[in-house]
Each structure stands twice: as C-alpha cells, then as structure tokens.
Length: 362
Image 1 (tube, rainbow, N blue to C red):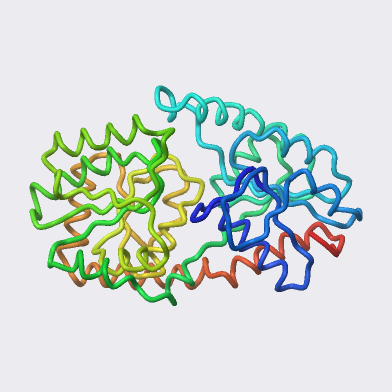
Image 2: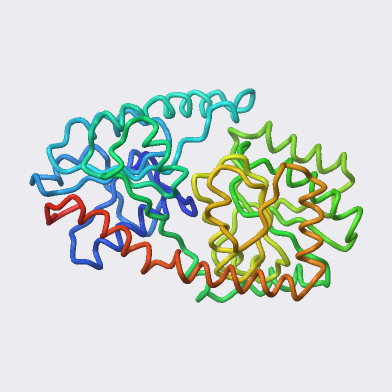
C-alpha cells in the first residue's frame, strides 16, 4: 500500500517489484493506493485493504514517503501483521517558496515518522542504512529494522532495445553527461548545471548535459530558475531538458552517456545510480545523504560541494577511456553483487521471515 502509484516513479516501481516477488513465492498479493496512474496493473482502493486482510497472519506493507492520513489510520486499525517500507521523506525546506503543498506534506511526513515507529509494527524495512537510521533515531527496534534496497527496472533496461531515433539524434561525437530524476528542488539540478558549465567552458566545449525527468506544475518556479541559470551561464544549446522518457529512450540515453552525474542534496537511495551502474556508465556525484553508500567504491563521490571539483571529476572520467572503463567495470560488478532483483528478493524474504509467523496473504 502507498499513497500514490505513478509510471516511472521509484517508490511505485518498488511496490510493483515487491508485489511481483511475493507472487513468485506463491503469496496472494495486491497493490492498494489512494490514487494511481498505472494503466497495465490492477490497483485497489486503499479503502479496501481491511476487506483483503482477514487473517492475523496476513501482512500489510505500507510504503511510506509522504504524509497521508489514510495510511496512518489503516496502520493503526488493521488486525493483521504490519510492515513499513520507509523510502525517506524529503525535508520540507527544499520546497519553501516553490510548492506550499509539498512543503506542508513533507513537514507533516517528517513528524509522522515518530507515529510510524510508535505504531510498533512487526517489521521496518528501509531502502538504505541512511533511511534505517531515521527510524532508529525515532526509537524503532533495531532487531525489527532491516535494509532492503528498492526493486527497480534496471534488468528490464538491459534487455529492451534502445530507441534508434534517440541514438541517432545525440550520437554526434559530443561528450554526453546524463542526469536522470524528476525535476524537483532537492535534486539540485542548479548545482549540477553550474558544475557542468565549468566543465563545458574550461575542459570540453563539445559537450552537453542531458537532463531526463518529468517536470511538474507544482515546481514551475524551480523549472524556470533552471532555465534562467542555463541562459545566464551561456548553456542554452548545451543543457537539454528532455522530459520523462520511456524505457527504450532511457536505454538510449544511458548508452549515449560518457558519465552519469548527480548533485542531489537528499536521496534515500537513488535508483538512477543503480541503473547507470548496470549499464557500466561511470557515476560522478556529490556526497550527500544515501548517495555515498549507494555508490561505495564504484564511482566518484565529490566532497565538498564544489562545482570546480565536480567539473574536474567529470573531465577525469570523460577524458580518459581507461579510467572510464575501469569505473564502469567496478560499477557493474557492484550492481551484480548487491542490487539485482534476485538479491533484493532474497533480502526481502529474509526480513519477512524474521517476523516468525508464516503469512498466507499479503
């Protein structure tokens, strides 16, 4: 169960992947949400959760990432076993002056972490140790708290054919720096654009920054600011906002890229980093929140947040084929060792088994 399911959303992909994993293990599983944009999967209204969970051994898994009153109410009322999958709640200050709705929902969402912990659920799952620490600081029982990385579509990206039109459009000899993620304030695209400007003007004029991600009306002020920064830094033709991308287009962008770069200040995990790793694309990132732990030694983590250091790192990766190849190989190995669907599924069921009571339905 979660507040909203949307195509291409990381939390939604985790819900879908978890449901599929449960069904592969022979469990009867359903997805519930307050609202949904999915067209190819059946999603049930959250109001029907209690009708589905009839036995004490049944299990409700609530994917939590933002304040949602019906979710807290159901967590308190169901008689079945209860689990939280905590995806982190973005601190509200990132949305100040941009989206009052998101600012308020995230403020309440951060406060409700304590309520979730006080609900004394049977199991607490977190995408990363960074997220798990949020729960532990509010008093969650560490013996009931486990890290389970999110399910994702990286394996599907590896199998799908890349979009030929996209490949033809950008395969022109220029160096391509890629960023994937919705256009939201905590992603700090402005910091990435500033770092790219130094790389572009000081190291490689024949380069472009491709920003893949959905733009939302709620963040129109932020989107406008990014365009203004791009124009001010004389990057009008070199920073491309290409919007949301389907799987075939996304595959093409990864294949085209010399590096994946991210300047986000708040990530509970950062699935696009895993996608890049699986495609052997070197990752360069500022070292904030969960990002260093997701990358580990399989990319370049830049500290402190200095655009000149980020530009230098991009130049090192993009300007030396041996360095690029080596980082890509290490990244792919880290992906294979830690983040495949099979490994995530195994971690999920190891955690579920710790509740000790076998479940018939979910």
